[in-house]
Length: 373
Image (cartoon, rainbow, N blue to C red; front, side, top):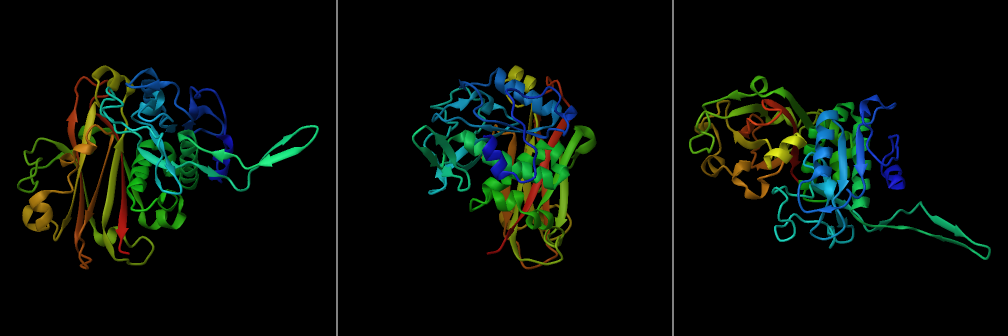
């Protein structure tokens, strides 16, 4: 694991220990990211390991990467931590999940609180070309390339990529909620390109947009009564964050205009482990609605007819995303008109008043343009 982190992270100081530091902010240098190789013993339910890791992330704002586990259908105990980035394994030759990558399927995991794990996948089953192990005896010297396999390997590769991102842009160091949104957007790419989306300097600086919303819900969110007719939120009761962009706002970062098909949007938020354990669910649930506008108002007449009629870009309509502490969607169909508008609306769909952090939110947003081929 130590060698993997060195190989995949060029700008980080790496420590190895048997446990997490009690106060990572007091370390010198400060610790911003942790990687848990195997996540401990297997578990089919949200237990103490997951709860403690969730509380650790929530209280310390560190990014934590955990290997999902190497037994098909079974998670490592800490891999069930909702706030963690849980990593499964991909075979580099097929770019498909390996046979042992844990899947949150009811027939395998009957009490996983409906969390969809792993969150992302990364490479396993490979050699590192420049690293050899050497064994010596009185008769011979034997040298060979070690073979790296397992979700602990995938977690190490992912942690190395993320550590480079944190080292390159200080903004991400204190915002695990934003880092997770970035990784969810990377996961959604049509090709396997974590490196392109996460660690490429030019791409991130010019065409990659991250935001955070941390603090009091009532201060950060408002209630609107102008949802399009037919929307599931057209009752004027739910709080939301609304962000409006022109197409040029998000594609002119480098001084060049590129044709785009649309935008890829992801949110992720942090939760108290105590709340999850006590309530047996996420204390908050957020949803995203994204759409294209032909004008500034948000009423039905200014929204493209396809989206207005079916709301395909509302995550609430996607049952596969329910129960996650992240949501994602794409909005496509942009015309060549540079004055067209793009709206992101983040809705607080549910909040349990019994939560110990009721009325507080720690939410990250990531937006990535989808460029035309």
